[in-house]
Structure formats: C-alpha cells, structure tokens
Image (cartoon, rainbow, N blue to C red; front, side):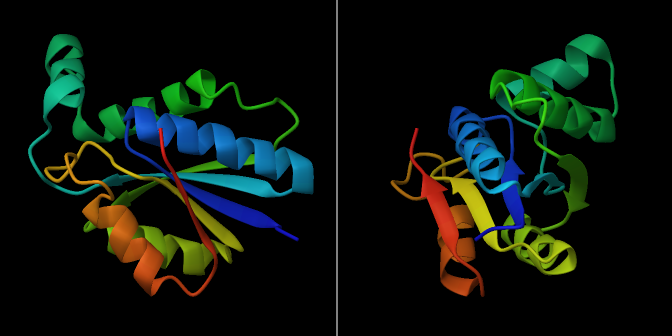
Length: 142
C-alpha cells in the first residue's frame, strides 16, 4: 500500500511520536522512511537554541542532530530503510515539495511542533500540509 513514507521531524514530542508511528507503518509495509527536518530560518528557540549554544554547533548540525535523535528516540527498527534529509525554507512548503521529490505515498506529521503556533490545537504546518497535499496525510497527536 505504501512504498515511501515521509515524516516531518522538528525535535518536538509530537514529531517524535509521528516518527514512531511512521516507522511502524514503514516496517509493516516494507516502505522506505524519509525523515525530513526543515530549517525555517527563524531564530532557534528553546531546546534547539540551547543545543546550538551549549555545544557551539552550526544550524545545519542542529538539524542533523534532530534527525539522528528522532531516529533513536522513536526506536526505529533496524530493518527499516531510512533516508534523512534537511530542507530549507517554509516548513510546510518544504514538506510538500520533498514529498513530491521522493514520490511519497504518505506524509506523517505531528499535530504541533516547536513553532510559534505550538499552542494551537492543530499547528499551522500540519494544517497547511493536510489541506494542500496530494497524497494522504496522517496527523499524529502526542
């Protein structure tokens, strides 16, 4: 049913749960799991800012760490084929564009992320992806 599953990762608890769900689906269907972190070019806040400052690492390294830690925290099974990518720009637009580039059959996003609208029931990124995507979108609530 699914050959390529794209999951958006931003370091939030919602994203971590989305990765876990996407990984389970990838294992079940033998699909490739594409993990995407997007640098939205906004100032880093909270834990991301602390990570960059405390370890004196670049923005790109912050997003590389987000991807690797999400894979570990979600306990992605070793037999799931994984591709990790870092995008740049508007997160929702980049998720949609990457889904097209990789031929994703399914997009998985957390219901809220680390963005400035984190307090909303359904975050602005997940809402935009849900309404514009041309493939099924699964929104995972933490």
